[in-house]
Length: 177
Image 1 (cartoon, helix red, strand yellow):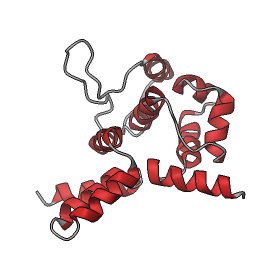
Image 2: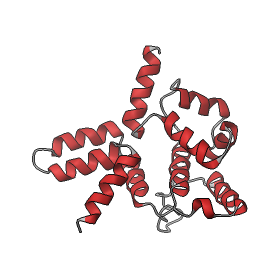
Image 3: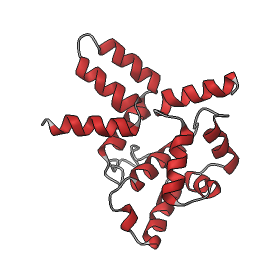
Image 4: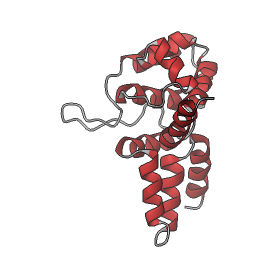
Protein backbone atom coordinates (compact mmCIF):
# COMPACT_ATOMS: atom_id res chain seq x y z
CA UNK A 1 0.00 0.00 0.00
CA UNK A 2 1.40 3.39 -0.99
CA UNK A 3 1.60 6.33 1.38
CA UNK A 4 -1.05 8.17 -0.67
CA UNK A 5 -3.36 5.15 -0.54
CA UNK A 6 -2.93 4.79 3.24
CA UNK A 7 -3.50 8.54 3.67
CA UNK A 8 -6.68 8.39 1.56
CA UNK A 9 -8.05 5.52 3.65
CA UNK A 10 -7.22 7.41 6.84
CA UNK A 11 -8.97 10.51 5.50
CA UNK A 12 -12.03 8.42 4.61
CA UNK A 13 -12.03 7.07 8.15
CA UNK A 14 -11.94 10.63 9.52
CA UNK A 15 -14.50 12.08 7.11
CA UNK A 16 -16.96 9.21 6.78
CA UNK A 17 -16.40 7.12 9.90
CA UNK A 18 -15.02 4.16 7.94
CA UNK A 19 -13.42 3.45 4.57
CA UNK A 20 -15.82 4.05 1.70
CA UNK A 21 -15.01 0.62 0.27
CA UNK A 22 -16.65 -1.00 3.32
CA UNK A 23 -19.76 1.14 2.95
CA UNK A 24 -20.06 0.57 -0.78
CA UNK A 25 -19.50 -3.20 -0.45
CA UNK A 26 -22.32 -3.43 2.13
CA UNK A 27 -24.65 -1.61 -0.27
CA UNK A 28 -23.61 -3.79 -3.20
CA UNK A 29 -24.32 -6.94 -1.21
CA UNK A 30 -27.61 -5.66 0.23
CA UNK A 31 -28.95 -4.32 -3.06
CA UNK A 32 -27.56 -7.03 -5.33
CA UNK A 33 -26.24 -4.42 -7.74
CA UNK A 34 -23.07 -4.32 -9.79
CA UNK A 35 -20.56 -1.53 -9.15
CA UNK A 36 -21.69 0.14 -12.38
CA UNK A 37 -25.33 0.02 -11.28
CA UNK A 38 -24.53 1.43 -7.84
CA UNK A 39 -22.45 4.17 -9.46
CA UNK A 40 -25.47 5.04 -11.61
CA UNK A 41 -27.75 5.31 -8.58
CA UNK A 42 -25.23 7.50 -6.75
CA UNK A 43 -24.50 9.68 -9.79
CA UNK A 44 -20.84 8.70 -10.11
CA UNK A 45 -18.92 7.14 -12.94
CA UNK A 46 -18.03 3.49 -12.40
CA UNK A 47 -14.28 4.30 -12.43
CA UNK A 48 -14.78 7.00 -9.76
CA UNK A 49 -16.71 4.55 -7.57
CA UNK A 50 -13.90 2.03 -7.99
CA UNK A 51 -11.28 4.65 -7.07
CA UNK A 52 -13.22 5.63 -3.94
CA UNK A 53 -13.67 1.98 -2.96
CA UNK A 54 -9.99 1.16 -3.38
CA UNK A 55 -8.73 4.28 -1.64
CA UNK A 56 -7.17 5.77 -4.77
CA UNK A 57 -9.37 8.77 -4.08
CA UNK A 58 -10.32 9.97 -0.62
CA UNK A 59 -13.31 12.25 -0.96
CA UNK A 60 -16.78 12.29 -2.42
CA UNK A 61 -16.65 15.86 -3.68
CA UNK A 62 -20.25 16.17 -4.84
CA UNK A 63 -22.65 16.76 -1.91
CA UNK A 64 -25.54 15.27 -3.91
CA UNK A 65 -23.62 11.99 -4.26
CA UNK A 66 -22.94 11.92 -0.52
CA UNK A 67 -26.60 12.66 0.16
CA UNK A 68 -27.64 9.79 -2.10
CA UNK A 69 -25.21 7.46 -0.32
CA UNK A 70 -26.70 8.36 3.06
CA UNK A 71 -30.23 7.95 1.71
CA UNK A 72 -29.38 4.51 0.29
CA UNK A 73 -27.85 3.38 3.57
CA UNK A 74 -30.92 4.54 5.47
CA UNK A 75 -33.27 2.93 2.97
CA UNK A 76 -31.66 -0.52 3.04
CA UNK A 77 -31.38 -0.28 6.82
CA UNK A 78 -35.17 -0.26 7.15
CA UNK A 79 -36.48 -3.40 8.79
CA UNK A 80 -39.01 -3.99 6.01
CA UNK A 81 -36.67 -3.45 3.05
CA UNK A 82 -36.26 -7.15 2.26
CA UNK A 83 -40.03 -7.72 2.31
CA UNK A 84 -40.70 -5.05 -0.33
CA UNK A 85 -41.56 -6.31 -3.82
CA UNK A 86 -38.72 -5.92 -6.32
CA UNK A 87 -40.70 -3.29 -8.24
CA UNK A 88 -41.06 -1.15 -5.09
CA UNK A 89 -37.37 -1.52 -4.28
CA UNK A 90 -36.53 -0.40 -7.83
CA UNK A 91 -38.95 2.54 -7.54
CA UNK A 92 -37.21 3.67 -4.36
CA UNK A 93 -33.77 3.28 -5.94
CA UNK A 94 -35.00 5.39 -8.86
CA UNK A 95 -36.20 8.04 -6.41
CA UNK A 96 -32.73 8.26 -4.91
CA UNK A 97 -31.13 8.27 -8.36
CA UNK A 98 -33.34 11.23 -9.31
CA UNK A 99 -32.66 13.17 -6.09
CA UNK A 100 -30.83 16.41 -6.81
CA UNK A 101 -30.58 17.86 -3.33
CA UNK A 102 -29.64 16.74 0.12
CA UNK A 103 -32.51 15.75 2.37
CA UNK A 104 -31.40 18.63 4.56
CA UNK A 105 -31.77 21.38 1.97
CA UNK A 106 -34.75 23.64 1.75
CA UNK A 107 -36.37 23.76 -1.67
CA UNK A 108 -38.19 26.99 -2.59
CA UNK A 109 -38.87 27.92 1.02
CA UNK A 110 -40.45 24.59 1.97
CA UNK A 111 -39.27 22.85 5.12
CA UNK A 112 -36.76 20.09 4.46
CA UNK A 113 -38.18 16.59 4.66
CA UNK A 114 -36.40 14.05 6.85
CA UNK A 115 -34.88 11.01 5.16
CA UNK A 116 -37.63 8.71 3.93
CA UNK A 117 -36.23 5.78 5.83
CA UNK A 118 -36.77 7.53 9.15
CA UNK A 119 -33.49 6.34 10.66
CA UNK A 120 -32.69 8.98 13.29
CA UNK A 121 -29.04 7.96 13.51
CA UNK A 122 -28.47 8.44 9.78
CA UNK A 123 -30.34 11.77 9.93
CA UNK A 124 -28.17 12.96 12.84
CA UNK A 125 -24.98 11.80 11.12
CA UNK A 126 -26.03 13.46 7.88
CA UNK A 127 -26.77 16.74 9.62
CA UNK A 128 -23.50 16.77 11.57
CA UNK A 129 -21.47 15.78 8.50
CA UNK A 130 -23.18 18.46 6.42
CA UNK A 131 -22.00 21.17 8.82
CA UNK A 132 -18.52 19.89 9.72
CA UNK A 133 -15.91 17.33 8.76
CA UNK A 134 -15.22 14.36 11.02
CA UNK A 135 -11.92 15.93 12.09
CA UNK A 136 -13.70 19.20 12.98
CA UNK A 137 -16.24 17.26 15.03
CA UNK A 138 -13.41 15.42 16.79
CA UNK A 139 -11.75 18.76 17.52
CA UNK A 140 -14.99 20.19 18.91
CA UNK A 141 -15.38 17.10 21.09
CA UNK A 142 -11.87 17.59 22.48
CA UNK A 143 -12.70 21.21 23.33
CA UNK A 144 -15.90 20.16 25.11
CA UNK A 145 -14.50 17.10 26.89
CA UNK A 146 -13.47 18.70 30.19
CA UNK A 147 -16.66 20.67 30.80
CA UNK A 148 -19.28 18.71 28.82
CA UNK A 149 -18.11 15.09 28.50
CA UNK A 150 -21.51 13.68 27.47
CA UNK A 151 -21.85 16.20 24.64
CA UNK A 152 -18.27 15.49 23.57
CA UNK A 153 -19.03 11.77 23.39
CA UNK A 154 -22.17 12.43 21.33
CA UNK A 155 -20.16 14.49 18.83
CA UNK A 156 -17.46 11.85 18.60
CA UNK A 157 -19.78 8.88 18.19
CA UNK A 158 -22.61 10.40 16.17
CA UNK A 159 -20.55 12.87 14.17
CA UNK A 160 -17.34 11.04 13.46
CA UNK A 161 -18.01 7.42 14.37
CA UNK A 162 -19.16 4.47 12.34
CA UNK A 163 -22.88 4.09 11.80
CA UNK A 164 -22.99 0.77 13.65
CA UNK A 165 -21.35 2.33 16.73
CA UNK A 166 -23.61 5.38 16.46
CA UNK A 167 -26.71 3.16 16.42
CA UNK A 168 -25.54 1.34 19.57
CA UNK A 169 -24.82 4.67 21.26
CA UNK A 170 -28.22 6.08 20.23
CA UNK A 171 -30.02 2.98 21.51
CA UNK A 172 -28.18 3.21 24.84
CA UNK A 173 -28.90 6.92 25.29
CA UNK A 174 -32.54 6.76 24.27
CA UNK A 175 -33.16 3.68 26.46
CA UNK A 176 -32.33 5.82 29.51
CA UNK A 177 -35.10 8.36 28.87
